[in-house]
Image 1 (cartoon, one colour):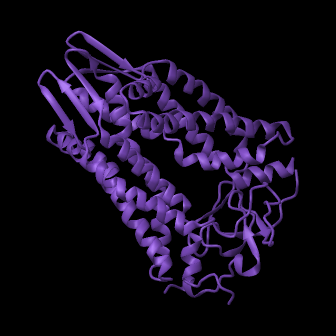
Image 2 (cartoon, one colour):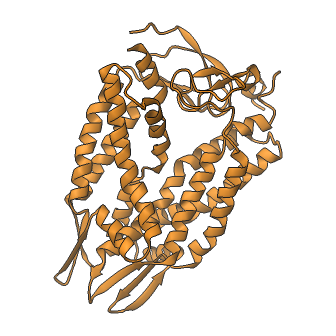
Amino acid sequence: MARMPASQLVVCRECDALQRVRSLSRGELLACFRCGAHLRESHGERLHHVLPLTFAASVCFVLANSWPLVAIEVAGNRSSTSLLGSIVELYQQGVPGVALIVLLTGFVAPAAQLVLLAYALSSLAAGHRFPGISMIVRLLQALRPWSMAEVFMLGALVSLVKLAGVARVIPGIGLWSLFAVIVLTAAAYAAFDVPGYWEKARAT
Amino acid sequence: MSAIDRAQFLSASSLGLLGCSVCGELNRALACECACWRCGAPLQQRKRESLSRSWAYLLAAAILYIPANLYPVLQSRTVAGDESHTIIGGVVTLWRAGSWPLALLVFFASIVVPLLKLLAMTLLLVSVHARSSWRLHERTRLFRLLEFVGRWSMLDIFVVAVLVALVRLRSLATMDAGPGALAFGAVVVLSMLAAQSFDVRLLWDSAGRNEHA
């Protein structure tokens, strides 16, 4: 392990103010003295939790996409859908633009997040830089706002409530798995931060 | 002005330094195109063409906001007859059905947030052009809020996606996505892009807080 300096110069990413910060004790958060932006966070050994969380989330992601999310039943007629099923349906109805938005934000971005997190953390565990690692860590940060699994989940719940008056609604295994994906991905991201990642990578 | 405002801060740019936009590491600003010494990300003093890009996305989002609200996002065909639902119509239906907590949620995500985003981005951009130092801290916080809530506006698109796929009961009822859905989705994506192209540090630069004291 490299020795941590007692204090270091940090620049705020939101207002450009330069400030000297002391090294943080575990679990401490530091905000910019001028604008209050999130500056640094001490992650301690939490980075070790990210890889197992990512694997658990990936398993749930596969489950969430191989089982129906929700089903409805009206007068003996039953109909169910999954995330990918709804994308195909949108495409077939002649609104490929909407299908593309749902595909990218509901499926591609969350899946890419999990794969890239696993790659970045494996590189750290292996102790050497895998090819393209710098670009991948950048991509991980850029993907964050576009990965909308939790918004999709809320959307599925809203549509269930909308139909509850006229049909019998049945939440499926996919919905529970999606909920697990959201919780696990949020936990993984909470333990992963880019400055902390590079400090660790330099130390190994 | 608070004590913090009066306190002198040196900005990285005034000392010929710059922070990496990805990992936050301090770098020396050189004339050449170069990369962060720690993480390899390309270094820029400020986001490239921040204001023009942000204006362009914002304008496109504002234009599409009109069809997004005028055209139906959902068309239902049931034994009781055909019906078209606009964004606002959907909120009204939920409210009438008595599920007002949900109606409020959709009202905020689909109507308040997109409109607020358009207005707030305009305010931020105009204030940079005006080199204003009015409520600098509040404006910085406003931007942080915009970045955080923007994605939740996609809620209605996902509701449409699920309903359209689920309500396929041949003779009883079907639902189809309307032309408003694409426009609304585009508004959400474009306003997110407008916020991402905007460099918050410009608020502090243009108010003269980052010049060499």
